[in-house]
Length: 201
Image 1 (tube, one colour):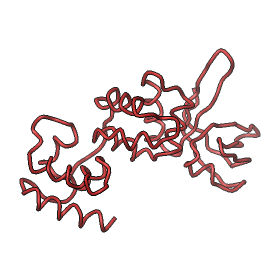
Image 2 (cartoon, rainbow, N blue to C red; image 1 turned 120 degrees about the vertical axis):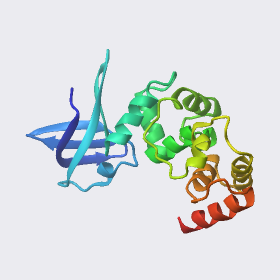
Image 3 (cartoon, rainbow, N blue to C red; image 1 turned 30 degrees about the vertical axis):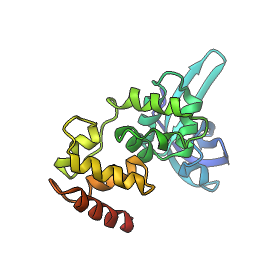
């Protein structure tokens, strides 16, 4: 199994890149947002890979970092999501955006990805919510906003709902409230602090 390939960019296209290493050109399918796809020929890059073996052939899928590779593998565990669909999603949304959308129960953000309808987005959230790890939240009082637990306070819920009504996605609103630096505050205080944080992004 090939974990990663380090070499120089020989060719790039909308669907991937050819990396030369040791006189061999490896054709790798990558998300269009990948930095390697935008690299000029001759640039040295490191691409983390997943090898997919099927009856009709062997394909290498590549990613700029381990987080994206892990997320690709998680996406392909969702019923109805194959390798090509997972790459398409990662071509429309960054790994962070996908992770936050799942954690914050925000299928609307996921449905922005090409080929992902509302039902598919909801299925991604449902099937991956317990699998995605690695996000750290500074505010202990907002932990339930991340996990979707029943202990979510009324003021936090009200603040998130108010931000969503202003046009922010649920994941953007929940993240802003989570990182606004307040705990056990009123809804109005959460909203003001969250809006200030959003304005600085």
